[in-house]
Amino acid sequence: MPKVVSRAIVSTSEQSKGTQSARAVLRSYYCLCGDFVLVLQGKLDRLPRRRSDGSLIIRAQDGKNGEPARKFKLNAQPGRRCLLKRKGKEDLELRQPFVCSRCNATVAYQTSAPPAGNAPFLYVLRGAMTEMQGRVPFDAFEGEERPPTDTLAINEGQEDNEDEDLDPSYVAEAENQETTSAT
Image 1 (cartoon, rainbow, N blue to C red):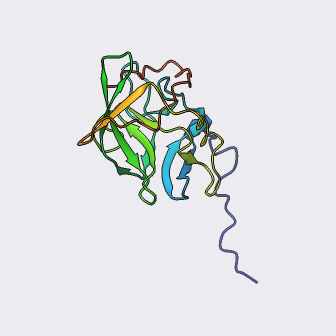
Image 2: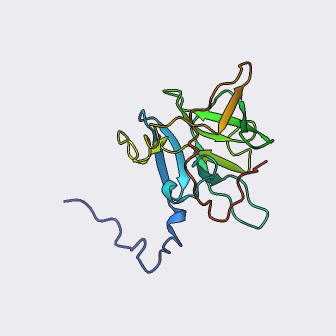
Image 3: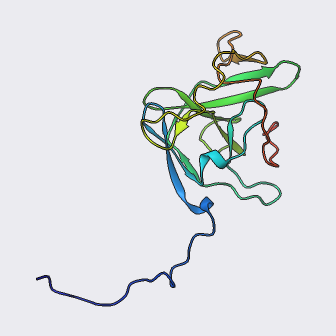
């Protein structure tokens, strides 16, 4: 029979404080190949979406109005930077993609040079990550029947390549976050 060392109560439900919200919970996300890619404070599917391409928006730095940054850790390698010019707009957008270290699939991007979190926002591509290894997210293959028509990508050292990650038909609210000019 094991020897009882102490009968003291370490903690009870009355002593411990519950988390204020689901935002305090850290969740792990995986690339479609199964490699660990992201730890995020809160659920990925509750984040606002960027209007231009439907990417999920993670606030990486505190906002000017006092909005707090989300805590996250991105386990991805920086990819080749590119400049995007949307049809009908004069501005160019610098994109620093981040790719899975295992399969080299683009999973996220930001609008400044690495490391991740160096820009005000980090954008997670729609359908690039899943909460369960081996399970494809429901939006991974959404809109594949139509190629994008509103974006032209110019990679460094290359000429006029189309960006495959954009879907012009997707329009979503970004829930009061100004993201179209995150510079």
